[in-house]
Length: 242
Image (cartoon, rainbow, N blue to C red; front, side):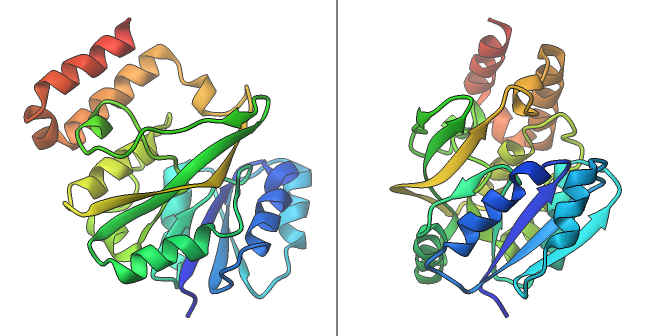
């Protein structure tokens, strides 16, 4: 059985997918599998790329278009690894990411999430440092990028990614769910994640009213946390409004 399962939802991102897979092929840790979930792609070139994938490490599953959360959950259900890395089909990771993260997870059962620093590429380039993890700060804003490693058992314990987060922020909601397990989060001070910036990406197209709906959904899903931290909730609503 592989140690890590890399789960890649793909919806019409065939133009970038091979770069993503190349970054996995360059990993110093080779004990991994790749699960690509074709989330109902309609682009002919993407379908052709998916059909061309022939590797012992790669399994491809095809679904109707249900969104990122459902695609990730499907991929993780099929995963054979103890640890999960969700990776979007247009992003990349550094060669030591899996090895360094697995070392942490193997040696520290008290850790739920491992991630590192990130760099932007594409339409914007350069370092984009995230603040160090803080459980309370996580309630105001997402300080962990989507491609962090976690345990499959913890994913199962919190019920996976919420498929109600149809407009986005499903990763933020998921990290809050994992934070409720009262485990540790480790940020390794090295560049491990390369985030492709595209003006047409989902994160850049979330409208104001959708952000309000998503925030309300997150609050409802984690009522206990937000009731204990009403000052933080007010601060978050203020930043959304102004």
